[in-house]
Length: 450
Image 1 (cartoon, rainbow, N blue to C red):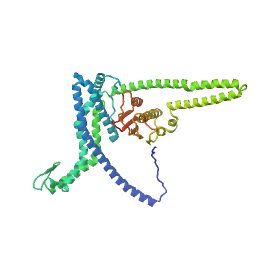
Image 2: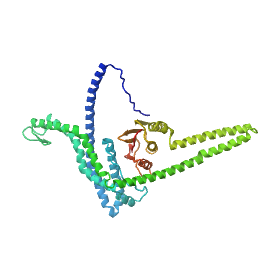
Image 3: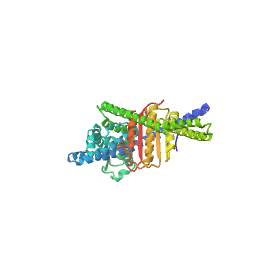
Image 4: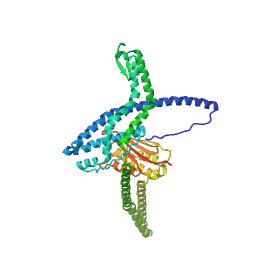
C-alpha cells in the first residue's frame, strides 16, 4: 500500500463579496490555528525537554560511571573485555541523541567515528576505540550532559509545567500547607501564607507560562546546540573530513571495480552464452531449411526462446545497474515499485518538488533497496513505512519497520555498505534499533532538486 501527497489550488471564480467573507473567515481560522499550533509546539517541546532532563541525569551519569570504572580496570585485564561493550553503549546513546536532535530541532551532529575491524580481538577493539578522538568527545559529552545538559533540558520543561503548581495554589491548594497564619510553602520566590500570596504565586506561574510560550522551543534547541558543541569535531574537523573523503573515494573505486567485474561475469555467463547459442542455431537453420524443414523449424523455435531469455537477462542486468523506472519516473515511483514487490505491507510517503542529481538518486535508491531487503529478511518485519522528503537542502529517507530490532552498523552487516555508499556523497546514516524493535533507519544526503 502507498500514500501520496496531493496538492490542489482553489477556484478563483467567486464573487468579490464571497471572496471578502472567505478572506475574513480564513484570517480568523488561521489565527486560531496558529495559536493552537503554537500551543502544541510548546507542549511537545516541554514534554520532550522533561524526558531529556530525566535521561540526561540518569543515562549519561550511569554511562559515565561505567566508562570510568571500565577504563580503570583496563590495566588489570578485565577492562579490555568490558570497555568495547561500554563504549559501544556510549556510542549508541550519543547516536540516539544525534537522531532526536535532527528530528526534533533540525540540529545535525555528524558522527566521526573511526571504523573498527569486525573480527578484531577485544584488546585490539579496546585500543582502537581509545585511540579515536570521537570516543573522548563522547566521554566529555556524558559529563556535560549530566550537568549542563540536565539544566538546559530542565529549564524549558519547568517553564511549561511549573506554572501548574502556581495555578493550583491560587485555586486553593495553599490550604493544604498552611491555615493562613504562617508560611507553609514557597513557590519560586513567593512565600505562600494565605490566599493573597497564593494569588501572587498564580501570577508568577502565569509569567513563567508566558515566558515558556516564547522561549521553550528555543531553549530545547539550545540543549542540542550544547551537545553539538561538545560532540562535533573541533580543530581536527578538516583532517577528519580529508580522512573520510579518502576512505569513501577508495570505497567508491573498489565498489566500481567489483560492480564492473560482476557485469562482465553476468554478460559472459548469461546473455553472451545465449546469443552464441542462438547464432549457432541460426547457422544450423540456414543449412537445414531446404533439406529438413521440420528440424529447421524446431531449431528456429529454440533460437527464438534463447533470444527471449537473453533479452530478459539483459533487462535484469540493466535493472541492476540503473532501473528503468528510476530513470523514467524518479526516486519516489522507483521506491514505490520496490515496495510493491515486498511480501509485507509497505507504506510509502513522498514529498519531493523535483528530482535530485542522477548519481544521488541512484545511490539513495539502492540504499533504500538494501534497507528494505534487510527489513524483510533479517528483521522479520510485518509492516514497513518509508518517508522521502527534501528539507533544508538535504534529501531525507526514513525507513521504519516493526521487526525485532537489533540492527547495527558494522560487524559485516549490509548497513556498512549503505553507510559507505552514502559517504561518497557526504551523506549520513543513522540507525535506531533497540532489541525488540522497532527499527528506524534514516539516510540524509545534501543535494538540490531540479
